[in-house]
Length: 373
Image (cartoon, rainbow, N blue to C red; front, top):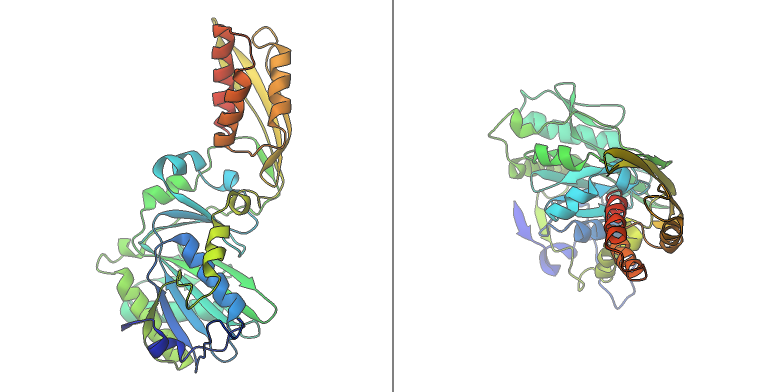
C-alpha cells in the first residue's frame, strides 16, 4: 500500500537524527519502508547518504526503494573510462554517477529496482537481506529458480545475474544496496557497460563481467510494482513494521536539510571523474600518409582526472616536432575530457602557421586524442 510521505503520517514515526534542533526532528517506532518519487540518480544517491549520516537506526531499520531513468553508476573506487562507453553515453544523454559505496558498475533504468537496507553497523547482514528478497520472490513466483551466491549476487537458473550488491559501513550505521533486474533494457545495458578504450592501465576496482537476464524474460506477467510490494510485505513481516510503502521526495530540503548540496556534489566533474584512481593510457593508431600507414603513439598519465604527463609521438616528416611538443606541454594539468581537449586544441591551433595541410593533420591528430577520452 502506497501512502504519501508527510510529517503527519510518517516522520512522526522516524528515528531521532543528528541535525541541529532548528532542523527537521524525526522519530521512528520500529522501522520504515520508503519509496522515492524521483527517478533522478543523483537525488536518490544523495538521499541514501543523508539517511546514512543523519538517522539513528538502533532497532529501527529502513528499507528504501528507488528507480532511475537511464544511468550508469560506478563504484567509489572505479575508473569510468575502464568500465563504460562514455562516448555512447554522451551521444545518448545517459547520466554517469559515482556512488559512495564500493563494488562494480551497474546500469539503471525504470525496469531495474534499487533496494537499500539501512541498519546499525552491528546488525548489518547482506545475506539476510538477499534471503528476504528470495522469500518474497518465492511467495509470488515459486517456479523461479533464484539463488544467492557467496559473492552476494542473485542468480537466475544458476547462471544469469539479476542482482549485484554494494555497501557502505560507517562508525555506527551501515547500508547495503542491491539491484533487481525486472524489465531493464538488456541491449542498452550490454552496450553501455562495455569500454571501447584501449591501453588503459589502472589499479582501480574492476567489475567482473557476468551474464545477465531480466526476471520478465522468465515470466512476462511480472512487474516492478508487484516485486516491490512483495519485498515490502516480506520486509514488514520480518522486521515487524507497518506494511506501508511511504512515498518520499529525496529533494525535499524542508524534511532533509542539506540533501540538495549532496546531490549537487555527486554531479560535479570533480566527484564523477576526479575521484578516479591514478591511471595511464598507452595506445597507438595508424594514419594514412599517401599510400602507406604510419603509427602515432600516445602515452598519457592521469591523476585525479587531470593529465599529469603526456607524450604524443608522430613522425617528424608528418607533423613538426615543435608542434607535438607544444601539444604535449599544453595538456599538462588539463582535465582528461574531450570538451576541455577541444577548447585547448582550438586555442593552440590559432597559434600555428596558416598552413592548410598542417591544420588538417592537427585536426586528425586531435580527433584521435579526443577519441580516447
